[in-house]
Length: 121
Image 1 (cartoon, one colour):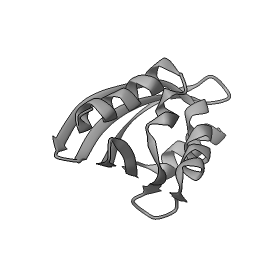
Image 2 (cartoon, rainbow, N blue to C red):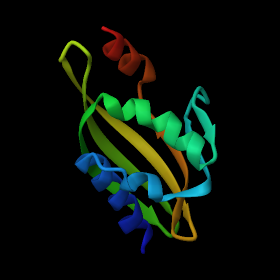
Image 3 (cartoon, rainbow, N blue to C red):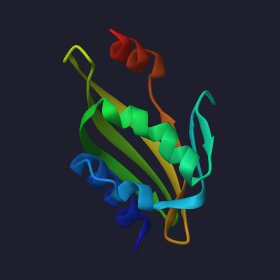
């Protein structure tokens, strides 16, 4: 499977709200944000870090993807719904590394403060 297909399959799984995305990570996967506030190491830690975020995700759409060998960068539009039913759309940049046909590293670049404030309101 190509890097593009693997990363695209990840987002398709998120959009369909199934659990196939979990199977795409390597056992030694790393998930972090640009600030370092998020730093999960290992497949189970990555899944545990990402799962609460997905509860507020209503929609996912890849707007652009650039792939070079085993590296990919995706601009992804997320639509969120908070506990009050309010909606927020946010574009997020996600940088991927793939090795041995598995997702090994994800670094996200987004406004974490705006997301957290919205989800708490």
